[in-house]
Length: 294
Image (cartoon, rainbow, N blue to C red):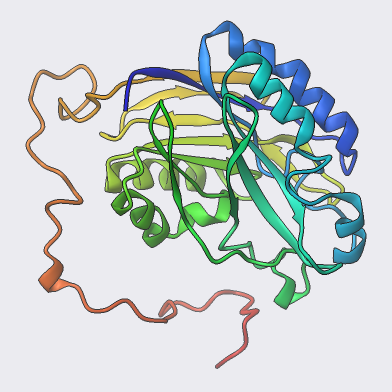
């Protein structure tokens, strides 16, 4: 990894207006370039808003395959400005009605380096529970000239194992496009924990504004350092949040201190103490258990 500036672009998507949202993103991009960003991250489902208020078949018709109309202008912008962009959009699957909630890493030359499909759709969006999103089943990392990067999306950030998997694969930066439906406390806690647990940078970019499902998103995008230090945080408005990411992020225990850090959470794990990971559920019962079972 080398030192570079990363930016999150908080926008309020126009519900289900793919063209308008792409144009809004392109208008916002110069604000990230002005601060010297080489990596720019947009919120979850930036082309439509999170809850489309459509059937999965109607949503499939609205969006496109990747690459396609939902990515091509963003790809051209990345090439023109010679930057990396993480662009999040619903993605057509091969069969009508199969829709993925995806994040795309676009390189400096405009090519798509990788696509991540949300592995943990929120229960309300999950197709098997009456929603519209089919889950993905891969979590990869990508080598760039800036860093080794992994991607998660919104609710994925609630699952420690996923971010740890990316960190063990070599991720130095994990980006988290989001349209969060819960509280600031949940948002801050999960970003902080995923960064500090795994000693990675977390760039969490949350939407603002509303969607067709009547949800409202509160922004407060943030960038957290591998030692848990909050480097930047936005407000509840359309804006650019940015920070400089440095390769010596674990040199000191915390920002402003001179005490050298002597621990590494990944290296210090006592693997003999861990059982094999297996399926399970909380001992506390959700108010509405949607997956069945006693």
